[in-house]
Image 1 (cartoon, helix red, strand yellow):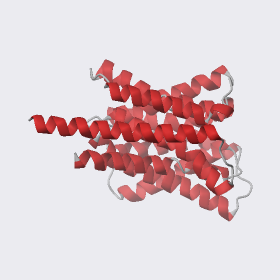
Image 2 (cartoon, rainbow, N blue to C red):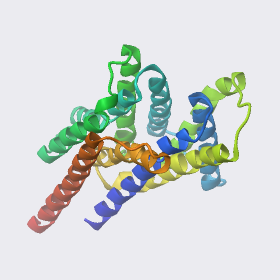
Image 3 (cartoon, rainbow, N blue to C red):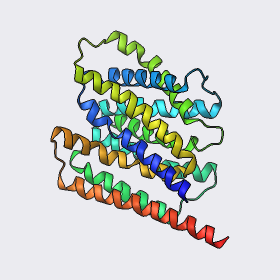
Length: 284
């Protein structure tokens, strides 16, 4: 049980790192594609230093995982350009639902009742704290955001495979993003950058990308895909909270209701998982 608690804690730490994105991006004035490019470039360098002289492993699982990580990051940026930001966040965090489908159809694993209840509570919570900002948006943007939810689910699902390596996948995904977005960075170069923007971009690459996936790699093998995806929903809650703290953009009452619903759902899910694991050990 201790191993699983540690794994869940690492996933929580990964979500905390991911949640810094909104606050850091708000400090940067240049366009989203340049932000995504330089975030990936710094992340790539950080992973390169971490891996040192060891050559990243390559197999189909690692490549698929890298594609899912890269697509999740790029599709989310595109979705934010084509639809409301709230829509993009809510649709991306349909990921646990897709994890359940993947587990059921590929691994023949059914979600438990408490996992289904947790997903329902989390969706209600996410909708509540973005309720005032939700719009119909453009159908293409919404579909892209939904697809980012599928690829995000793939990150959790594929990295549970025995021959997976999250660190190698993250390294490869950042390499992919740099190659794909390099033309955008050349066509639309950054004309000026402040010290604060430089720090923010550096932190995006080192904390939101590098540290997040280091923690994720330590946690994902010790817990289930569905639990990891449910714990990560805390990112969607904390993202606007950091913006509120550092930029004085106070959320409305519905945000705080949604916040407490998701916190309750996450604690409830972890408690139920630990209770089930303890019961299984005692029955042996």
